[in-house]
Length: 166
Image 1 (cartoon, rainbow, N blue to C red):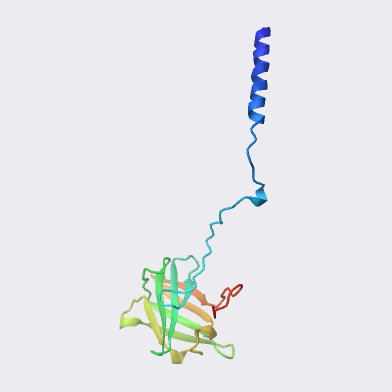
Image 2 (image 1 turned 30 degrees about the vertical axis):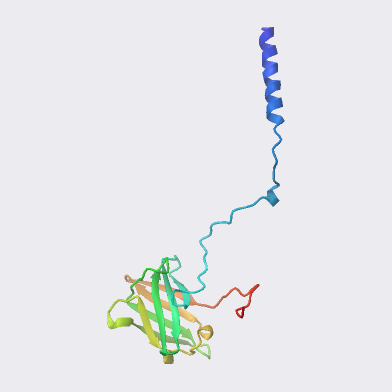
């Protein structure tokens, strides 16, 4: 019985020496590199046609790209899926623009090509309170598969740390 006590004591001591003498380099938590968090937020600076991207519906499944064509005197809204590449067809689009005096001005946009459903809608620039996209504010109402989606045209550019003149 004495022998088992001696063997047990030796095993515990050996385990302690081997386990506690393991001196690995550690990095304090505050100094450790951390992977960036995966957020649902994402920025869309510019669409495929160089226009402002508007998220429609809030779930990132449908986006609009609003483009003002000064040469053609037309405003265009292109509709895409979440990848900003796949066209999405709608049956109706209206833009509720904020006018100079703060009143809301409703602009009905027509499907390009004259069909009932389209992924591109147009309106004359004369219908808008401004032909400068940076001066336009408002929101879109878009009907896709019988469901009305809405999204705001805003200009919340991140100007911190850079200039657009660069």
